[in-house]
Length: 203
Image 1 (cartoon, rainbow, N blue to C red):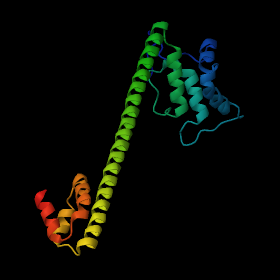
Image 2: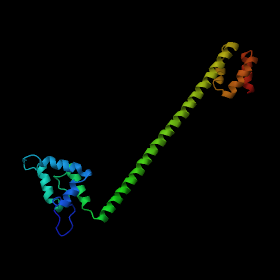
Image 3: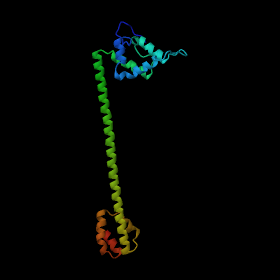
Image 4: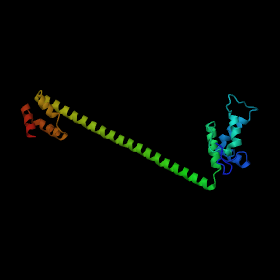
């Protein structure tokens, strides 16, 4: 948990004036300062069941943060995770800071590309779905209109020729729009069911 003093510390020392200002003196780290002040303002603190209070954890970090290699298990709260991250970044050399910011920029750019691709994929899927829905709706409307034409022509044929045999009714119900128009024109010349049969045979 504690690193050797011979190498550069991973985290900045919060007990120095420079380190304290880097940790607590900027707007992005305001939450750290608020949390720290909230635990030192009370007149006293207590320890129960051999577990450290929030105040004790802050005192431990203020004393030993520069000596730590990694956050201890007992300091995994969100506030302390943020503190370790900020303290490590604050202690970066200019080169390390540039490398970190470049990697962060790359990550954000990559994430934006992935998010944009996903959104475009969803949008394309929605458009394809809408177009398929419109096409399906047009086809259903066309079939409904075609069936209406067949039903109307069957009523006209029945009115003029009498009840049609099932075979002829079935054939009328299979006519294409062009054939329906042709039969509608021939309707005035038909006088018997035999004439209707002849019309089908000629077609």
